[in-house]
Structures are given as structure tokens and as C-alpha cells.
Amino acid sequence: MIADAISLLFILPGAFMVFSAAVGTARFNSTLARVHAITKPQTTGLVLMITGTIIRVVTAEDFSVHERGDIGMMVLLVIFALMTSPVTAQRLGRIARREGLYGDDEQLTRNDRPASYHPRRINPKG
Image (cartoon, rainbow, N blue to C red; front, side):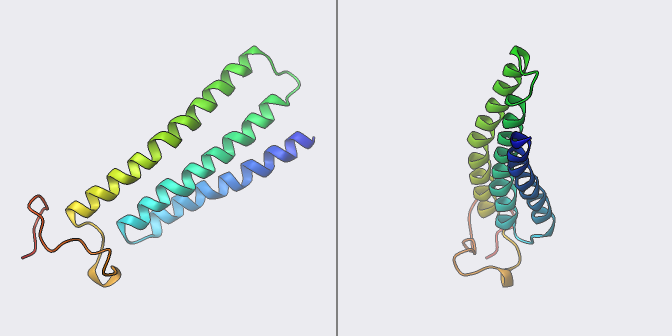
């Protein structure tokens, strides 16, 4: 019973973070804000949910060798997500900057604006 409550304390905030990442991706206007919504809370929510799941599986009465393999797969999933999420965010941000896909000019600060011309950008502005 206590283990169920502890696992629930991990799973509910994790589910909320994954949900908020999905809402942020749909509602945010700029590319960088969407990249942030995709990578940061989604990865943290995934880690929290898998931590809660591992606690629940380990404390189950019928925990056996088969469940150990499931835990190993969940740990590999977390490692893979933690390795690929920063790389994906960096590449998306770099492509958005190179292609000038940040958003409308009135939404951007001075530091967010891309350069006025880049040889490889689509539709360079003179």
C-alpha cells in the first residue's frame, strides 16, 4: 500500500509534465518555445513516470525474473531519452536559426533575431 502511494507520487507529476509538454507544443507560437516544451518537461515527466513504474513493479508480490527484464528495458528507455533529447533540441534550434524559422519579428527580442542574410537560408532577406 505504501509503495503504491509512493509510485503514485512519481507517476502523477510525470503524467502532468508530459501533458503540459503536449499542450505547450500546441499553444506556443515560436519555434524555440516549442522545442523547449518538447524536450524539457517531456523528458522529466518520462523519467518520473518510469521511476514510479519501477517502484510499483519491484514492490509487487509476484516480482520475478521476468519483471527484472522489464525493469532493464525501462532503464534503457530512460537512458536513451536522456541521451537523445538534448541532441534533438540542439539540432532543431540550430536548423530554426539557420532557416529563420523563429517566428514573427514583433515576437522576437534583439538576441533572438537571426542574421539578416545567410547564404544557405531559404528566401534570404536583403
